Amino acid sequence: MTDPNLSATVHRIVADQPVTDLHTHCFAPRFGHSTDGTGRGLMLWGIDELVTYHYLIAEVFRVVTPDKLPYDHFWKMSQTQRADHIWKHLFVDRTPISEACRGVLTTLSKLGLDPNEKTLDPYRKWFADQDADAHVDKVMQIANVDSITMTNEVFDEHERQLWLDNPSLGDDPRFRPVVRIDPMVCDWPDASEKLSAWGYQVNSDLTAGAIDEAKRFLNDWIDRTRPAYVAASLPPTFMYPASSVKNSPASRATNETALTQVVLPVLEDRGLSFAMMIGVHRGANPSLRSAADISGKADTQAVANLCAAFPGNRFLVTMLSLENQHELCVAARKFGNLMPFGCWWFLNNPSIIESMTRMRLEMLGTGFIPQHSDARILDQLIYKWDHSRRAIANVLTEKYDGLARAGYRVTEHTIRSDVQRLLRDNTRAFCQTR
Ligand code: FIX
Ligand code: ZN
Image 1 (cartoon, rainbow, N blue to C red):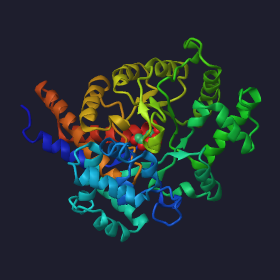
Image 2 (image 1 turned 90 degrees about the vertical axis):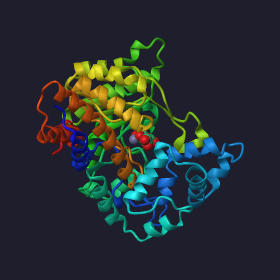
Image 3 (image 1 turned 135 degrees about the horizontal axis):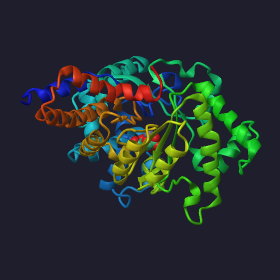
Image 4 (image 1 turned 180 degrees about the horizontal axis):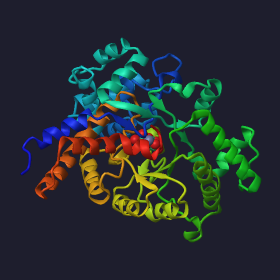
């Protein structure tokens, strides 16, 4: 017998479960914030940030094409003007039906605002009355997020300086730091120039002494930030071993040395996971700036090879291409040190979250992390989690219904412990945080 209230029960339990958000680009207020007057604050929040999110910049150029509004004119506008332009064309003149548009509406509604305003002024007034620090608590409470994992770009000069100037920068208990090291594994020569300038004796060939110095750099940042894990995003062309690619350029081998002889040994030693976000091709249309990137199919064999070659390391892996998802699940069935996570970026749409979650449940049981928000603007936590929770609950309902049909007794307790595992405990266990 299936329970006629099953769907409502599952949706309620999923909504009530606090989420530990594994990957965001949100920052604690002590990193400075977008309305603090410095123009350099890293914590982004408020209506103008929400409406000028890079997903929406890409979308507005599809309707007001660059022949009508050249890119450089758009970038010369103030942020207020850009937000007004996007609001007019995507939210007033057209139905805001895309996922990124609907997300702004969900966020406004859940903050208690009417999302039907024709101009942004009422929202601007409302946000101007909020206090940044108190707003973090409010957003976390509405989104039901118990911990926000940041992305701390240690190769970014501004952020680096903030960390050097303030030893307690990472101490806000609501936010967990993550050391993000893309240049180290994607462009070692560039990373090595920076490390040299910062006083580490490295070289672009990464010879023996340089390896020790590169390890010292990574260890210093782990000590300074006490991260949940260390992360990098990688292009679709990422391969391991690099030598398996014919005529592979020398730079690939050096990047691989940085990964296998610096990053992975340090992380094993420090008991930290390595998050690999694979499949982003940066700057496909550079005129779009932050919205310029596209996705590409990568090789999941590289992930399997790394998991096999480095059994002492734990790998959190998300892949950007839809085509990679099945193979990633297959690889995860073979390697306990591989944890698939999230429906990243262009995959963060309800239809895709549902199909990926369904496939992952079918192939991995509850042994995966179904979603991360990737929120860049604090307020986005509200919609990203609201929309994802609904998609996840829809799929779980279907699966519990199937179990009931097979004669299994599905209780509220069963559902609650599965949901807790999926939205919170798998993340904490794999990152070995309480
Ligand atoms: O590399 C990343 O962590 C990506 O998630 C971001 O760079 C990207 O801009 C984004 O916000 C996707 O959601
Ligand atoms: Zn991200």
